[in-house]
Length: 310
Image 1 (cartoon, helix red, strand yellow):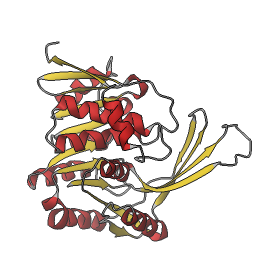
Image 2 (image 1 turned 90 degrees about the vertical axis):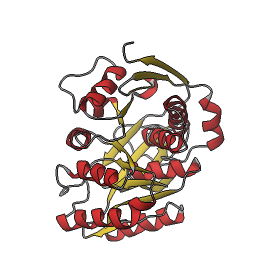
Image 3 (image 1 turned 90 degrees about the horizontal axis):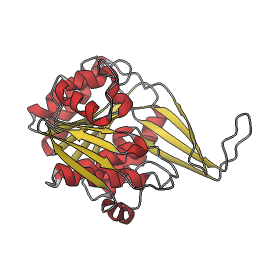
């Protein structure tokens, strides 16, 4: 079972319009509301790829109840800690050309008691049945600076492998606990290095030097790169006509985790991940891609491996 931890979930509202025009009244041709946040998006994509998933995090108010009910309706096994503050909403408007505008409300505040409740839930009920733990997204206001390190340490104490997808101080804290994998965007990788890496491979190697066992850095349409202590990889993705790229990084994470959880090599996992992220960009809404299309795209992804000295 893949356990997806989303400390800052959200109701994701996506509207498709013909054309984004500043100052105009935009009338959507399609509107989609999903329980979101990075970890929930990962869970949805992993579920489509055939994995058993459980979702957890903090949820509060009417929005939080809707989020949990919607996750339950999708079969994503929600086990959330109830908090006093209302769960946030994010707004995405995307046009026919793939251009988008994103508005994200601030994260829902939590208390020390809320964090303690989540750690107890993880330790007593969720980690024992997990194989991989994915800690995804930004920490909410009120979570301690070392909160993500504590989540990694709890996963390792339970004998579970752990992936982190975050940036800034949360990623820096997590790296100190040596996560089994990190999967981040190029900007997120740069947020914890002293100087901007010259390319995604260098960024991945820098994350390994900071503590990651396996580091994967996505770079949009330019593909991705990865590194561990012995090797590095570059990943070239096929060209497509994007509909909505939001959540493609989360679909990438899901493809990576499902393949690794099934015993696949890093090479195979990177190909599956890149295919999932690419297929996601062809569909409105995070993690709702066509599984047959993802399988088709795997053969079009080019993964190249070289030794650490290369």
